[in-house]
Image 1 (cartoon, rainbow, N blue to C red):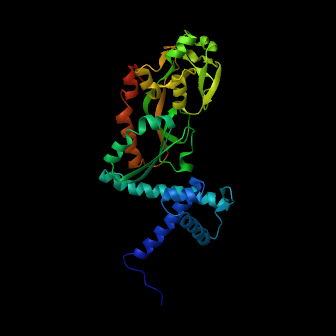
Image 2: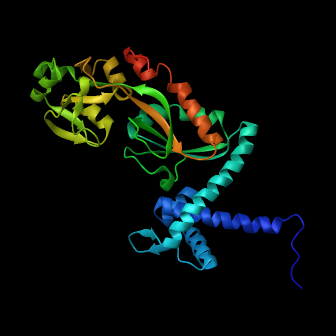
Image 3: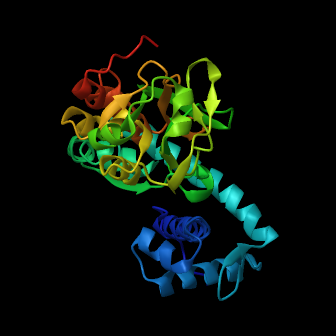
Amino acid sequence: MGRRLPENGAFLDSIMTDKLEDIRTFITVVQARGFAQAGKRLGIAKSAISRRVNDLEDRLGSRLLNRTTRQLSMTPAGAELFERGLRLLADFQEAEDAVSIGSNEPTGRLRISAPVSFGSHCLGQIIPEFMSRFPRLQVELELEDRVIDLVGSGYDVAVRISRLKDSSLIARKIVTIHHVICGSPDYFRRRGRPKVPEDLHNHTTLRYSYVDDCWEFTKDEMLSPPSKFRCNNGDTLQKAAIAGGGLAYLPTFIVHEALADGRLEVCLSGFEKDPIALYAVYPTTRHLSAKIRVFIDFLVEKFGTDPFWDKAIGAKRPKS
């Protein structure tokens, strides 16, 4: 005689929970690009991650991952499960968030992607207050200047500074971002000050390697002045400018302290490119989760009006 299931369904609940966790583990392995990193994200041993994925493959009767010593890749079956599993977990999260919204206390892990300099200058000092307000949230902030795939990498929300192109993501503008051209007092004593953008051809510039093939000015003027140093980090460019290495074209949230204390000075004021914006972007879903909603509202509260970096240097923000 077969075993009778408990009337409360606890045994069935256990089976469904195990299946859901196996799928979550598989998706995390794909997003983390490996078993070790997936184990770190989930807080369990690499061996347990491998065992869960093996059990999932055995149960489904399909190989989900091609494993080599250097990388993992999904099989066609794995790609199918990955897409369907993402939707399943999103539906599950939506159900939890519906309850969370009712209690006004979001829970779970919030994975955030943000640019390196903005994260270090601006987000680091406000995250503790955010966690204090929402103690049932665990925040994971990863800093990366390259644009990443939010869904494929498992992020809930990203902070981006750009003129956003059309995409499948939903975006909310947080604040206008201004850029200034600046150099050290010593540099200006040695090289003089450019009066118009064309004068930059007689100067040395420090370039942000991800986007600074040309410098943009008002009236869509584009120039490519001489440069002997390129870097993919704005803080490093600021340090090089303070040391007298050349002129840098940087957002005010990076250089406001150096401008306020005189280590840097602005030139070509009035010729700067039109401001861009800081956005919070998140994947399109049927329902905005509570944890994303409260984080975006918090960003607006902290940065949306008179951000401290512009206020510190007396920058005038145009109406937008």
